Length: 221
Image 1 (cartoon, helix red, strand yellow):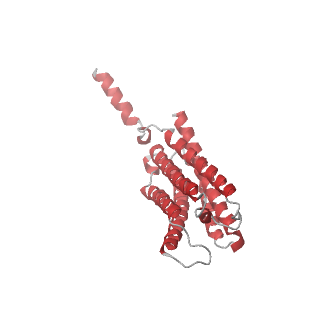
Image 2: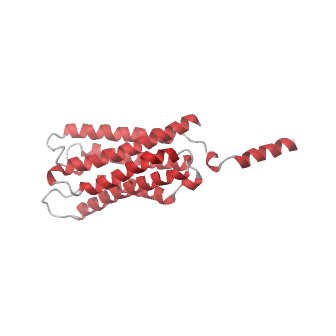
Image 3: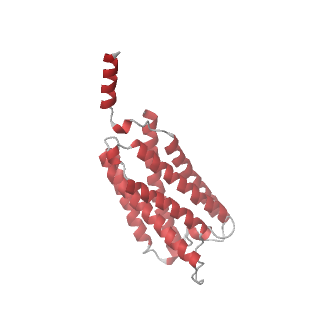
C-alpha cells in the first residue's frame, strides 16, 4: 500500500548509517580467541625453553631453535586477531568514527609481525646479516604501527556515541603503551626481555578490553 511504503521509507531514512550493518560477534570472538591462543602458546614455549632467561632474553630469541615454530604460529595467530578486531570495529563504529589510516596501521602491524616471526634476528655478538636487519625493521614497525593504531583508534572513539565513554580509559591506556615502548629502549641489557614483554602485555590487554566491549555491543544488537 502507498501509505505503508511511505512509512517504511521514512523509518529507513531515519536509521543511523552505522546501524545498517548489524554488529557481528564473530569478529570480537575471533580476536579474543587469537589473543588467548597467543598467550597460551607463548607461555608454553617459555616453559619449554629453560635454556633462555625470561627476564633477560627477548621474545625474538624464542623464535630460534627448538619450539620456535610454535611461537611463529602464535605471531601469525596474533596478527589474525588484530585484523579481526579492526574489521569488527569498522563495522560497529559510526561512519564518522571509522578511519582508513587506523585500519592501515593495524594491517601494517599485522603484516610486519608475520615478517618478524620468519626473519630471524641476529644472535648477540654475531655478524650482522640482511635477515637480521629485516627482523629488526619489521619488529620495530609492528610495535610502532600497533601502538599508533591503538592511540588513534582510542582517540576517534569520541566520534561515536556508544564508544565515547570508553575513550576515557582506552586513550590513556594507549598512551601508556606508547610511553612504555619508548621506555623499553632505556631498559638495562639485563632487563631487555622483561621490558619487551611488559609492553606486549599492555598492548594485549588493550586489544582484549576493546574486543570485550565490541562483543558486548554485538550481543545487545
